[in-house]
Length: 382
Image (cartoon, rainbow, N blue to C red; front, side):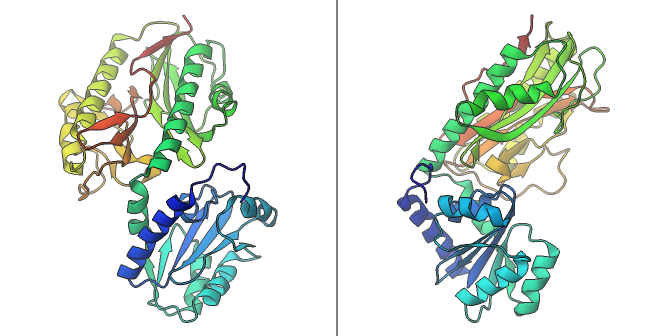
């Protein structure tokens, strides 16, 4: 591993290894096969390789791990960055290479834990080479381990939150009527790239406040020309070595917010604060959902998730009236990281709305903000 890479300490990796081996022993798992494509957070957690294209970590309980990387020209970078000593090309078919590495490390595997969205052809290759009943889903225990952050992880998260705040200040400073929506991307990414941050997400949409067409931040920006009287709604994440901040704010372009948008913003902030105040070590998903009922009492609804763990770790919650399933049996614990993000929209068609929120650390008695950008409806380009 290169000395100029900001990696975790040996003690941090030892802590992770011990925790993973504990659940592998409990569940009688001979090995984990951890798959990732692009950003590969599950792979990175135990290998130090953040992922570029496909990556598979073969992680035996009683032998050294093997990291398989695509593409061939990505292997030298993985060798430099990964803490795993055995890094290999994934081969022409990474499923076959995974099976070979697994059988090399575990002579007679009986029970294999799978993590990640393994493609069907890769899974079929493994299934043909192993007993039909060998496989089990090991993602839930691994992701619950990842949900509670160590001191070293919290340090990265604080830096990522700072980078994200930099992007929000850049938008406040630089957005102008006459720009095209896709120019916002350059503002966001250019702001934290100078500081060493990397891209997480930049969901942004603009629409006229007096004739709105969308109430949810967009994953893809358009060539639409931004006009005075628009609202810019955002969901922004900057990343620091695999860890992201996340923040949601609304910007009124060139004018004060309309009464309708001001009302929606007030309800979004109220919902955010009630949900935030419901969270502490020992509180539950049911507590959060009860606190969020205020958004419906005020005559609105939400579109996006109400709350999710950092990087889409558990839990992922909506309100009682917007949930796609039953309330999960989930208890918050100290040093979990959550994003509270009420995306408040009109209850009829959802075309009028905005999103307010940010990243929080769960503490013994409540939560801690990781961001310092103000919680307000920003007016810019005046």
